[in-house]
Image (tube, rainbow, N blue to C red; front, side, top):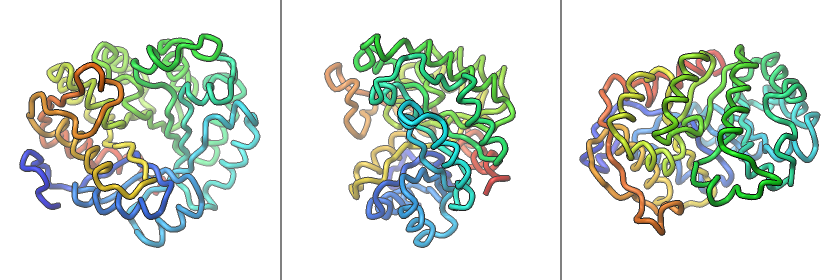
Length: 316
C-alpha cells in the first residue's frame, strides 16, 4: 500500500465487505483505489450477471460475490420471484444474497407500512430458502435518524425508525440459524442507539455488522469517540469493514474519500477532521467532522480482515 496519508498506519490486508458493482469501467477505478488503501479482497454486490462475469474474469480471487435482490420486488411481485432468484444463485456463481429493503423501497412501491414485514410468515419462505441453500444474507432494512426526520415523513408509507428496528430484530430472533450481515452498523451507529445494538449482540449470535456507509458511520461515531471506541473494542469480533462504495462512475475521488474517511475514523487519532467529501445531511448545519477512534492493532486486524474471512469461510 502506498502511504497515501501519514496518519494511516495499518499495513496489513483489508477486506471491504460491502461494495456494489453497477458499471464495469467504474469497477476498475474502485479496485485501483481500494488497492491503494490496502484492500486485497471485497464482498461485491452485483447488480447484473454480466457485470459479475467481468469482475470474476478480470480480477480472479479478489471477490466474494453477492447477488443483489431489490427490496421493491417483494412489494410489487411478491415472494415467488425472489425464491426463483435464490434457487439459481449458486449456479450463477454467487455465494451471498443481498437485499436493499430500506424504507425507500416501500416508498417506491407505495406499500403499506405493514405489508410483507421482513419478519412475517410470508417472508419466512425466503429465509427458509436461504437456509436450505446455505446462503448467508446481507440485509439493509433501516436508515439514518436524519432520513426519518426529513425523507420518511409520509405516514401513509413510513412509520418510525423504532418500528423498523423492531422488524430487523424480529429477523434475528426468528431466523437464528442463518448467517446474517446487517448493513450500516445495523442502522444504529448513532451514539444513543449503541446500547440497543449492544443488547442485540448480547442476545443473538447469528449476525455481524459492517461499517458502511462511510459518511453515516464516520459522522455518528465521531460524536462521542470514547463511547464509540469502547463499543468497537468490546464487540470487535462482530464487526467487519465495509465502505458501501458503488462502482457506477470512474471517479477516483469518490472512492478515495470513503476509504480515507473510514480509515481515519478507525485507526487514527485525528480530531475534528472534515469529512473528505460532502455530507448532504449536514451541509446546511456546519458539516461533518471525524474524530479518530485509534483502535488497537489487534482490533483493527479483526475488523479489517479476520472477521469477514471467518464469517464467510465456509461459503467461499
